[in-house]
Image (cartoon, rainbow, N blue to C red; front, side):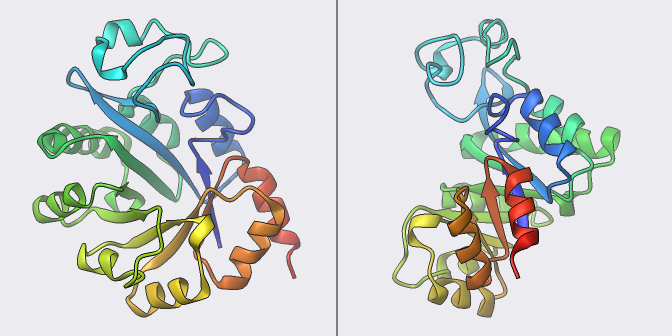
Length: 234
């Protein structure tokens, strides 16, 4: 079972900062996950639409310029990083899961440009890059334009048809919230050729349950702790 660092090693460093990604890479986790928004023609790594929870700023992310956002403290003096900056830190990870939060279909060319540049300069293999989203229209548009990217179809519910929606999107993996994961869902995902990933899994009992269910990977805020516990499961 793979361990993904959720927003980096966000249990020990400010989430979605270079500090968190460097800490995650030091744990030898299997992959990293982070969120991006498009702001004034830049791709920035941050989870929320509002600034209050994770930065020294306030108000809507989209109502600020890139220059204004770069003056904010995202924790321990860290800046809100750009996608290019994060890719430079995590390029050697087995899987890089980019969750597309504040990204619309018209922003897809900007995303492709950034990833293409990263591949050329940093040697990032697109097989390493997993683009995930709750916006299934966005995932469909990405597949139609650049089918070489792996897609992760997100759900915060337990659909009646289980993982069928992810198969219809030609996804590589289906990502489901820990509250609704079931043996039936995992079995359905696997029979459709999909990886089953679960978020966010931090409790040791939950990690044990995910292992028993045959889940392929989990997103954890403390990847080192999750990996250590997983190694001790018989």
